[in-house]
Amino acid sequence: MRLRGRSFVGRIAAATLLGLTVSGCMVGEDLHHGYVLDERALAQVKPGMPAEQVLQIMGTPSTVSTVGNKSWYYISQVKSRTLHFMGDTVTDQRVTAIYFNNGLRVERVALYGMQDGKVFDFISRKTEAGGQEANFVSQLFRGLGTFIPHS
Image (cartoon, rainbow, N blue to C red; front, side):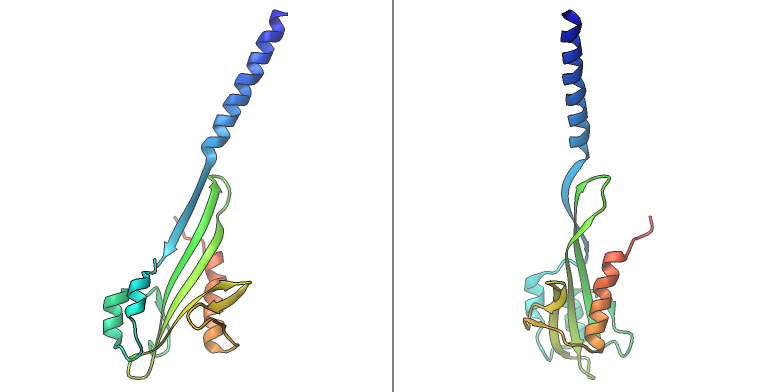
């Protein structure tokens, strides 16, 4: 009879220890990577504004177009992690694009994100049609999800 009591207490202790160990692995955090968009700063960027002024307001872009420096991209990504040993899940990706004309003045601003699996401009509320710029932004989104930084 006494042996049964010790066995029961041992099982309770083991279950408690296991529960505490697993709960220590739970994180439930969001990880922000890249440019953190300031909505007030973006609202200050207007068509016709010179590139130097955009740089002062928005800061250094994450990347620029390779031809003529006519497009600046500010890239951000939010990942969610529930357990330390599990991989991250991308919950949000955004690309803020500022397009310049030949005189390096703002032509237009776009804020791209994913909506229903397609690249979507949240400012104009349109899905981009096929073309060189849409393909570049799509490549940015595909590349962000597969990028693994070196430690």
